[in-house]
Length: 197
Image 1 (cartoon, rainbow, N blue to C red):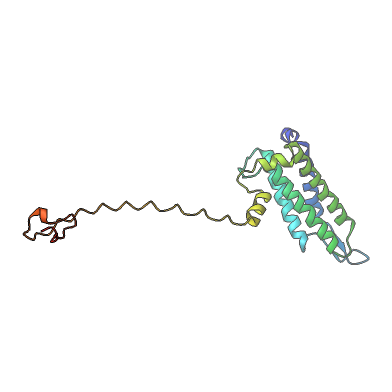
Image 2 (cartoon, rainbow, N blue to C red; image 1 turned 45 degrees about the vertical axis):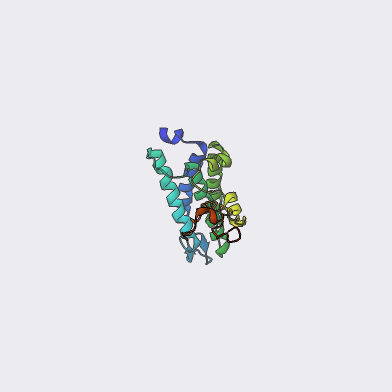
């Protein structure tokens, strides 16, 4: 009992509501006859999912009471809120899609709402939704996903210009052809100067 009282008020509400909801799923949620011979409990259609989620919630809260800590990438408040929201949705859908609902189906919806209220208290005790979002750094936020998906791709930067070509080596002066004439008889260009002679 000490461990139960050590839990937060929201967790206590979730556990009590979950146990009562699980019990109520075995009562007649539908009554097809006047004398109650043709009845159906919540364990059909969408009620199966609601029942399984309720079992998961009660088992998870039982582990918390037992002091068993399961390492998960999200906080306990986030897990409780997700389970509670799903349980409430499936309880509502089960009640709305079934014909001939009985008082037990309405009690089930109220108990599912009680579980959701307990989860909301847990989220508030954990610091609110914003704090829970900050605790999940590995999970991308929805705003960054949408900007990444809708942002046009950036144009690649132009390639770096190629390095300048090395300056061509200065051509060596061509040696004059050996014509047997004296060096004075030839000009700078290597042609013979017959006019001077």
